Length: 193
Image 1 (tube, rainbow, N blue to C red):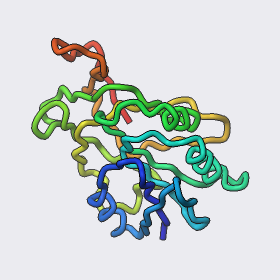
Image 2 (cartoon, one colour):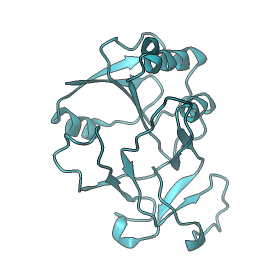
Image 3 (cartoon, helix red, strand yellow):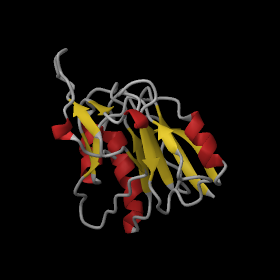
Image 4 (cartoon, rainbow, N blue to C red):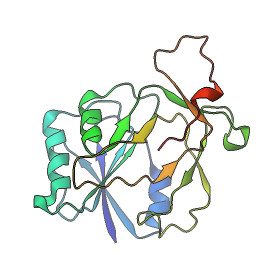
């Protein structure tokens, strides 16, 4: 089994539906507060689920230590972002070092076949990789409302970034400071992680 530590203490969202899917694929979950504890040694993956409160320097140090794994690496952090989060400078700087570029704003899907109710409720596609290989059906689209724009960035040497799911290539980013007259255009279309 894969042991997953879900980080708590930062007003994260409830990911019980995703947890249910992964538990059926032999993943074990426990909740960990980095404010008061540490990540257990037998943890394979840390899950950060749309926190609203930024991490402290001490918490970031615990994440770095987990990923470093006494120089052995081989550990994973999975990050989910929401457009409602706002800016989290400490966490975003940490993610950038590890190859995850977080942008401000929200993702709009312009293909009406890839949305649920409106352009802010897009479906994403699960990417085939080692982390998703045991999922019962990776060809199913996942409803992912109010996504925070993210891209794979340049990670420090020796670090591998694996994107679990992506939007279609018909998405645009609405900047957080866009005024009420902002409208998406086809000139800015791209896929997001």
